[in-house]
Image (cartoon, rainbow, N blue to C red):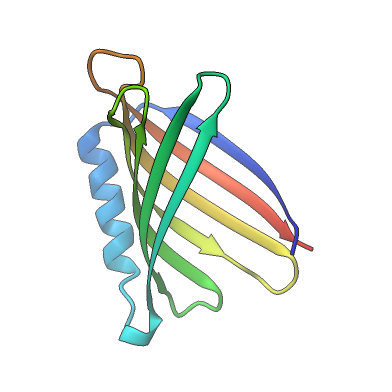
Length: 138
């Protein structure tokens, strides 16, 4: 099945405390009532980057739960990336958000994330992200 996707990420200024309070509020509000509504997903991915000639290992762990409003799901995720040319962890991300899959081909995802990165840098840098993903199933 082919999927089209449009992704918009906005860098925003938000304190770490505000980001974590927002993430905690979403997680508490969306706690599933039953265990059969809780999903755990672990993705491992390998990439070869031709421009820099290095191999990247990615791992993303996600926990999501269905909320009582139709197709609305809330989730929390963490992702890490390790690059072969630097042999160290170069990116760590925590993300929380909601997904909405109404009837038909439209798919929506709104999220906030905190990302720490140090690719080709001597120390860690952090950014906050606010994202919107609009997708279509064909």
